[in-house]
Image (cartoon, rainbow, N blue to C red; front, side):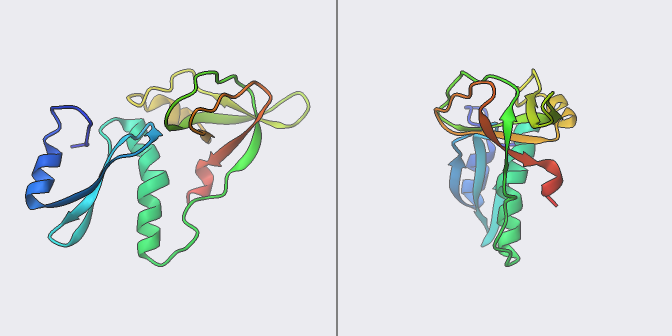
Length: 156
């Protein structure tokens, strides 16, 4: 099962009984509940239970951990800057990874368009998307501003 930040998450206690939990929450959305520690001297990672949160943490955290364990230094694709074809006026205390598509505007420039449903429980947006727009903590994005975009194609 996935990890959670609620009272009904029994996985944390089970892992603590078998080993150690070093990290319990991340300042990202989706993906706040993520557990990392060790059981019997082996690393253990628990993904969030919601599908989009599990996808985001697998791509931006777990993939990097596994690649570093194999000696790879560059573990996260370099984001490209694209024009925001949306307005994001909801500052958040966590870094946000929004599911988005790239589409050319009338001027030919690529624009990031957000899926209207960004809930971590909905995998539909991830199936529709080309990648992730990164919105930093407390950031607002006016339409037409540059935003960082991580393409799913770059997570080889």
